[in-house]
Each structure stands twice: as structure tokens, then as C-alpha cells.
Amino acid sequence: MSENNRKAWLYLLPAILFLGVFMVYPLLDVLVYSLEEGYNFASQTYRGVGLFNFSYVLHDPYFMQAVKNTFILVIFTVPVSTGLALLIALGLNSIPRLKDFFQTVFFLPYVTNTLAVGLVFMILFKKTPYSDGFVNLLIEMLGGQPVDFIEGPYWAKMTVMSFYTIWIVLPFKILILTSALASVDQNLYKAAKVDGTSPFRIFRKITLPMISPMIFYLVITGFIGAFKAYSDVVAIFGTNLNAAGMNTIVGYVYDMLYGDSGGYPSYASAAALILFAIVLTITCINLLVSRKKVYHA
Amino acid sequence: MSERNEFERIERSARTRRHVRLTITYILLGIWALVVLFPFYWMVLTSVKEYGAYNAEFYPKLYTLAPTLANYREAFTAVDLGRYFVNTLIFTLLTSGLMLVVTVLAAFAFSRLEFRGKNLLFTLFLALMMIPYELVIITNFVTITGLGLRNTFAGLILPSVTSVFYIYLLKENFELIPDELYKAAKVDGTSDLKYLLKVMIPITRPTIVTVMILKVIECWNSYVWPRLITDSPKYFLVSNGIQEIRENGFGRDNIPAMMAAVVVISVPLIILFLVFHKKIMEGVSRGGTKG
Image 1 (cartoon, chains in turn orange, green):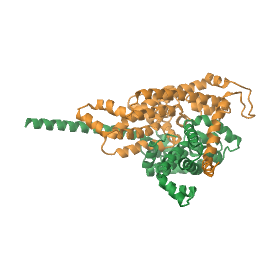
Image 2 (spheres, each protein chain N blue to C red):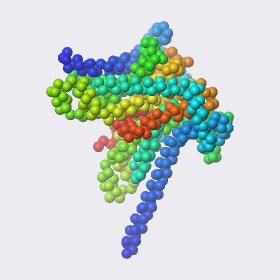
Image 3 (tube, rainbow over the protein chains, first blue to last red):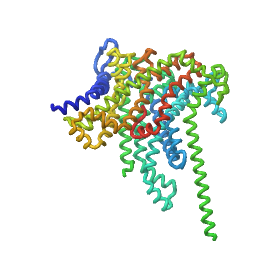
Image 4 (cartoon, chains in turn purple, orange):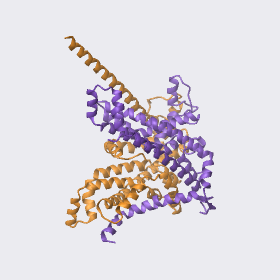
């Protein structure tokens, strides 16, 4: 090995060590864990090898509840947040003044502590014997019936969770779409205006195709992010998500690993691999669709 | 003459329409700004309400005429908020610092040094970017527990150090520096390390600062790993502290004190954001994602 070679590996050594121990090895290990049946955390022994862990997880009602919650959250929040972000970005790009100000304000949720602000959302939505809470006050003003959004019916809990998720993910999407819109060639718009094209047609035929790569990028990362929802749910409903009936797949993995219900890394591994398979499938579908729909300049 | 009038009329109506559209846009953007800012207003407002006064409000008031700082005193005395704060500070600084060293060294090797297997290794690094955190965290939990590093700073920090994405970002930036500079430095007998420290890092400082800020935000907000690896409040970070406060601290109904804690935890990042918002937004749009 030449001197240059040795030096390069020396520079890379810390990164390789860290990645090896905390990324590559765990990746192989998680496969091993998922196949070891009846693994005992304390004695580090197992009974046999097979697919029992997967079958256990798939038959666990808590896991199925988590899958259901996660899918509802994904199906609702990804389209709504992407659409809303597009509307806001269009608005931002059409105003002559205060664009920077609005953009900065809209980005604020990105830098806040999810757990801390989640607590504020919990208080805004909570209904206690002493007070209906702020959101219920608004609902009553509009003539509706107050609901306990935190410990009440399933749809109410889902609403808060979706709302908070959208609040958290919008800053990133607005930022990406605003810069995508700003980078569309202005000459295209001028040409369309000269031809007397209607604004809606301009949007459909020029704006949308030009920013479609970014929209698909956001849809893909949005799906991946939403499937991994966890911290924001904990922030609103507390750590005992199974009791609240609001667990997510990632939450199930962590519950299996640690806490009152923990100590089963094998089940956790199987659940994590199932999640990975779901995310991979959805991402591949997204990529296939985007290959057909995205306009490539 | 009438043609001219006609023209003016059309022009005027177009202007009116534009004004109406702009006004509506401003109002809608304003509403969303309100939705974004309201939780922050609410936490500050609630944190200065007196405990008794807050609980007496069946209809929550949008203002208070008798602000008090008692809740902040409560937040720092009744629970160990100060310790959570210091823990998070230590964790954030050490993790970001270590990450910087590891990342810069690796990016330098990939961008300036020639060695066998470079392309293969870089491809492998990139492939690691696709690995979801949830898959590796299980073994990391077992590893750290096995090493007896639970409830230590080492256990908190070590798995959070590497970031393949930042290695990639820095490598791209390092490669923008003309190769001639490197060759000239070599002719002058400058060592690689000296060249890295005296030339490359100063030139790419804007990117490095952005990377650091993004990592600091990530560290300050990290919740999942600290929760798995610490169960002694002595090592809680702010996120875990907040969860602990919510479930066990203050007595469950002392909302104003909780909000005071929430404000204390949020302030550092908000200040960081106000100072660096241009840099942060630019950095994130270049390829950051949440968390």
C-alpha cells in the first residue's frame, strides 16, 4: 500500500469506524434478530430460526392498530400538506411586498422542538372539567359541539394528529416549492401573457410541469416521513400510545424495544423490517409514477 | 375619444381586479401566519398567567393583565429544568463538534486524495443514506446497553455523530476549490492537514457553518434515541425532560409552569433562527429534511 493510500484511509478511519459500528453492523444484525425466535434479552439466547417473529407481529392487534393509524395519517397528511404548501408558495410568489417576512414566519415550525410545541397543541385542543380549551371555544362560537380532541373519539384524535403533523411538515414544503416557483423561466410566462392565455391555463400548462420534479420530490419524502411518524404523536398523546389507541408503526417498534412492554428486539426488528418493506414499496410506486408524469426539461 | 375611454376603463378594472386578488392573497397568507404564530403566543401567554387565575378561566382569555414570572421560578425549582438544559447543551456541542471533525476529514479524503477503492467506497457511503434510522436503532440500543453506556454522555453521543449526507455535501463543496491551489500548496511543501485547515476550511466556511447549525437544531430536538438510552433524569435532554414534566412533574394540572418550561426550551432555537434564518433556510432547501 502506497503512502498516499495509507493517508487517505487514515482520514477516512473515523467515519468508517462510526458508520461501521452504528450503521452497517446494525443493518445486518437487524436481519439476524428478526429471524431468531424466542430471543431472550437477558440471557442473549434463542430457541430457533424462522419467520415466527414476523407472524407474531402481523397477528398482534396493537401492530395492526398502529398500521391503520399510520396509513390514515399518511393518506390524509401527504396530499393535504403538499397541496396547502403549493397554494401558500403560489401566494408568496405573487405578492410584491413582505415575501421575505412571510417566508421567515412560515419556516418557524421547522426549528421548534416537536415535543415542546406538541404540548402547546395538546393544551389548545384539550377539554378538561375546568375548561373546554381554546379550540373548543372557537367551535362553540361557530355553533358546534365541544369535543375532547385528546382523549375523545378516534376521529377527533386523528384530526389533531393530522393537523399537528401538517403544521410541522409545511415549512419544509413551502420553502422547497417557493424556490422552485421562483426559478421557473419568466419568459415562458411573458410569452403566455402575450398570447392571452388564462391564468388557470398558465398554471396547468407552464407552472405545474416546470415544478413537477420538486412536487414529486416532496411527495416521495413526504410519504417516507409520514410513515415514520412518532415524536409528534408522543408530543400530543404521551408515551403510552397503545393505551390512547394512537400508536404508529415506529412507536410499536420502540415499545417492543424498551419501556414497560419492551425487551423484545426480535419483534422490534421484524416490525421495523415490515415498515421498511412498506416504505420501499410505496417509494418505488412513487418513482414509477413520477417517471411517467414528471416533465423533464 | 371613446376608444381612449374604453382603454382607460379596461385598465382601471384590471387594476381593481389585481388589487382585490392581492388583498385576498395577503389575508390568506396572514391567516396561515396566525396559525403558525398562535401556539407560540399561547405558550408565552400561558406561562405568565398566575396558576390560580389560569385554572379559574373556563373560557381561556387571550390576554392577561397580571403577568407573573412565578411559573419560571417554579419551572427551575420544582423540576430539574436547569440540568436538562445543561445536558442538552453538552450533548449538542459535543455531537456537533465530533461530527464536524469526522465529516471534514472524510470529505477531504474523498475530494482531494487518490486511493484505491475510492469510488466504490463513496458509492457505499451514498447507499447508506437510504438506510432508515429505525432499522439500525434496535441494534444500537443493544450495543450501547451491552457496553454499559446507558445513562452516559458517550452512549448518547456516539451513535449520533456520523452523517453521510453532510460528508457528501462537504465533499461537493471541497471539489469546487480549484485543484491548482492544492498542487501549489504541495509544491510549497504544505502538508495535507495544514492545507485542509488553512485553505479549504476557510474557503468553505459558509457551508460548514450551515451544516453545524442544522446539526445543532437536530441535536437540540432529538428525542427518540435519548429516550431509549436514558432513564435516569440526571441525563435527560430537554425533549425527554418535557415529556417527564408532562407525565410526572409539577402535578399534572400546573399548565402555566409547564408552559414556562416549554418557553425556556424553545427560546435558544428561536434566537438561533432569528439570527441565522437566511442561512438555515438556504441550507435546508439545499437538501436537508426534518430530523
